[in-house]
Length: 288
Length: 227
Image (cartoon, rainbow over all chains, first blue to last red; front, side):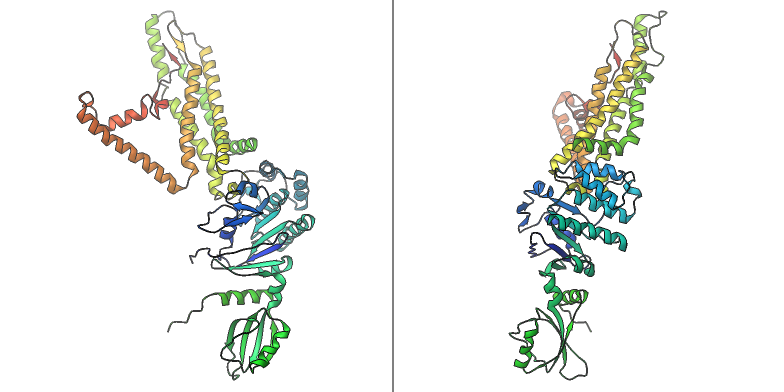
């Protein structure tokens, strides 16, 4: 499906680990390439680390570690050669730490990149990005296709770096559970639009499924956002509502409108994500 | 930055470049093989024979220089194209600076066959004795070889830097320019009596390859030995 990235206002707090969620093809990589200066936006402003994109790109890239979606390193080089090549472009590149990381991630310096597995290449990309000592780490699906052991190593290395430096991390993924464990902010992208952006805690707790009896036909002035409503078949006027921004004291609303709240069901992060996507998409009636 | 850039270009091109270096070293020796003064013949006959024999090899020099240029240019961008330029674009260098680094790395590598040719030419000339009236031009030949390499390299480097679409546009534009100048040449030939014998295509070709034309470096005098 073709779409344009439109009306995206993305705000990543400094020092946050920002999870950029979205289904495959939702525009995550394109958005990343826009703020990495690899693509030019038709309109709008992009500021990264207080500098303007694309005007100050050289200064920005010196402070950003980037792990792209697909391996982008030269296949005929060995690990050591690639590290040396990469280091020559970054003034703050920490060669000592690169060696430490290489040992920790068990990468053979003399091994050709072309002969490395996907997991090893993923580790090398992360090693290069982290050794730059970046203020911002941009990881585009860094664990895609990696086995659980390598995935754990990669995420552990990122978390160690963050705890040591307070760097900002922008990590895109469609693996919701992976981000749940490490992110404190989340942005959800779908079909080229940013459909939600909030602290992870709100995202986890704020989306609920409610079972409502005697549901009113119209929902006005509710203290929460009604995301969707669905009639429960054969149970009279009982409905299941999906709501955002829910808090326990909001029960009073149902008394006020003459309905009765039967149950509040917690959604896990994946269900919340799916609900959010479902509701953000325009509803189409099935053709007869 | 420059040294690693030179290294990776070398790493990409070395398997192809080394045969070119060997060929550049050997070609002058092949060109003078069997030549030299032979007291039994008249000097004028000998001069004629030396010059004509060595000139048999002349077409190979510009061809070799063109080949080196093309190989260097294509390998300069090969990996970046394969990787969608993502790595290059994520490096903190301006795009022009990156292209300049790559370009200059190729120029330095282009010196390798040039030096080989220069050494080979000197070695070849050391094996023969030239009759009076003939002069050897090993440095001129090496310089011309380098300039021809540079010309081919620059053109294909510029073409290789773009997308396939850009390349097609540029090549199409150049062809259109050539055809256009041929048509203009026809008009000129029709009105200038001195050029009436020539076709527009002749004039356009002449413009490309004769003095001052962009390809003149390939068609000029490639003699190692001349009067």
